[in-house]
Amino acid sequence: MTCKKVTALIADYLTGELDPETTSVFERHLLECRDCASFLKTYNKSTQAIRSLRYQDIPPEMRSRVRQFLQQKVKGIRAK
Image 1 (tube, helix red, strand yellow):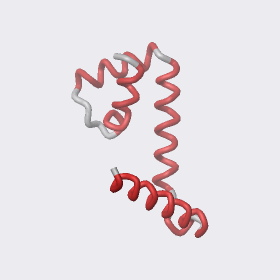
Image 2 (cartoon, one colour):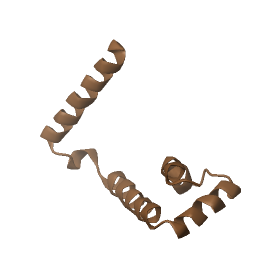
Image 3 (cartoon, one colour):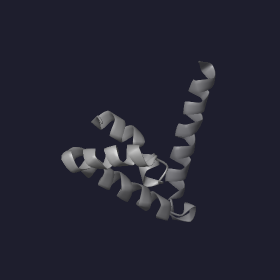
Image 4 (cartoon, helix red, strand yellow):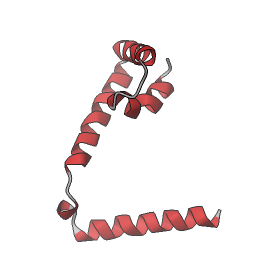
């Protein structure tokens, strides 16, 4: 398994959606690749931190900036 494939499968791995064979190959790669193991750890901690956020905890200016960013992205998609 390549590092690129591991990166693509991380979300499915963490949610337990990979089949047993793919999980085994995935975990074997992690044992051999420090970079991917480190990336998985960081990804997992980041998603946990994001899940712990509450909407009320986000400063109003940040909410506004994120909303504007997303609106611009949607407009760009529609223009294509």
